[in-house]
Image 1 (cartoon, rainbow, N blue to C red):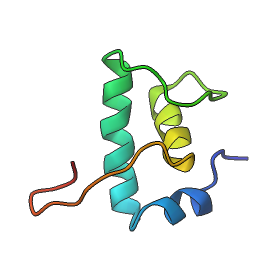
Image 2 (image 1 turned 60 degrees about the vertical axis):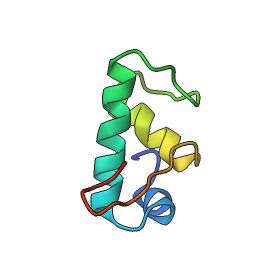
Image 3 (image 1 turned 90 degrees about the vertical axis):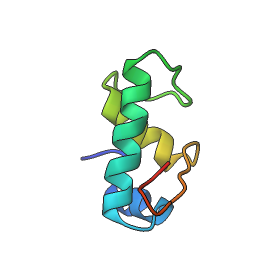
Length: 68
């Protein structure tokens, strides 16, 4: 089973595209040394980012040029 589920993740964002971009940006921050905001069962940066999004710790802002 995949955790967190896609249903939970899509309820936190407005589209799957936004989910991918937000998770990728947060994963890059984690790789660069940013501390994890939630405890997760995975050590992989993308998985950690998805757990943070599911927990509501990561938000994003849509702009004309992309996502901040």
